[in-house]
Image (tube, rainbow, N blue to C red; front, side):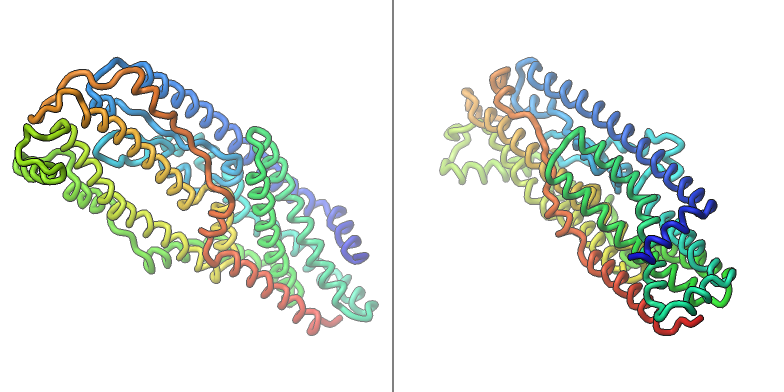
Length: 466
């Protein structure tokens, strides 16, 4: 503990190390502030439009119930405090979906379309900055604290005067870990608490603490690698060159290789093909022949031999039949595609053996609620609401007073009272349990990397000599 305190004092006295840390901390603050206000503005806009959509739905004029369903609403995915620290896939996927009969629409309103230049640089994302540029700071601190000792002879004096080298080695590692973590995670903590203040919750606090813990393990692993390299390198220059190479490999090359491997192991079908298959099996419009066949099915369901004897409106029955039939098609085809995407994410997380950056990236998005598993939870919730809304409107048409035996619009069948009975769309995100269920083996591999780094430190303490 005494050695750790001395090492931290030495770091704080080093002007270049402190200056580098200040630059990184400043970028983290700018990144977090930019992300915070971007999310705040986005949520404000979504809330305004969602309120206007609800008012439009409630005050639309009376009309045919099925036509009213086509005048439906947009459902918006609300932001979460942790999205400030890691927006994950959210800038690239839609944040709103149009809910209407016959079809499960794609998500629209991608924040990246309105990104500012600072955001397009890729450093307005705090988590991405930590994953990709955090290793650079950790290695710079490790180099400044360790390699210089070898060049100046301080290491030889310290090891020669000590009865065993372990306190020196572990003290270096602890100091590098604490200094780097404080520089990068203290701004993250403040930004996260500020975001949580807008929507406080126990789940949000748990996510923030788990997110900070993830990056603490990440930086501890990198610190171990940095100290080991510097202590075992023959010269300071060689150690610095190796660290730069490791930064490039661990932070940039390996994550891209992991992404390519996941794409090869779990390839995705073309989304255009998925949509075409849905259109073939659940067409929005049907032919006269198809209508006749479905009419016979409906007559058989109600046990009548003539259309005139149907106890329900034929048009309503046909629309309701096709709507409910499409649900199974969407669940099987589009749901299968979504499950494939989620499986690809788990495959990517399983490549964390390549680099701790892969594990940190997978864990960060899951804990922030900005990975595909959380996006799919919203899609599922919005689709459930769409089906309930459409089925309710179709139900009014199905039981219309006219009970027409022909396919025709029968006048006004839905009014203000019917519209008010449709509950407002609300979405409460899932708990942190979904995050841990979706990360696959990323956490295990990140801990293995930490264990490996600590094992290398222990090995270094046995072989290092004055």
